[in-house]
Length: 105
Image (tube, rainbow, N blue to C red):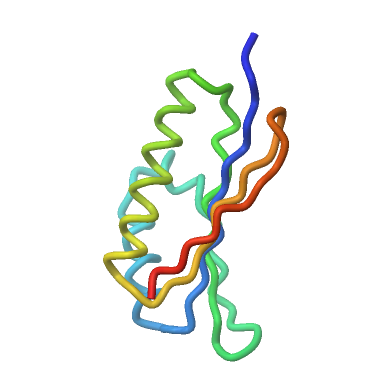
């Protein structure tokens, strides 16, 4: 048995160059890694575009969960290094729910 805790990151930018850099980086990842990302390149309003890093779906403490934790840390570091991204980490599951907002201006 194990606890399922879903962790996702939603990132948004208005900067076309920043979006393109992240999109290119994601597309350079191995296919199985790319599958965790949802890229929304269609500007809906004010030219904002989003990328979502989906939960890994693994139970806490499993190797896949640890890999997901590493993936999220690396994604956030990448967002911060490129700049012009706002993002939030969302957690939900057996431990409840919560939000961890971070701004990378």
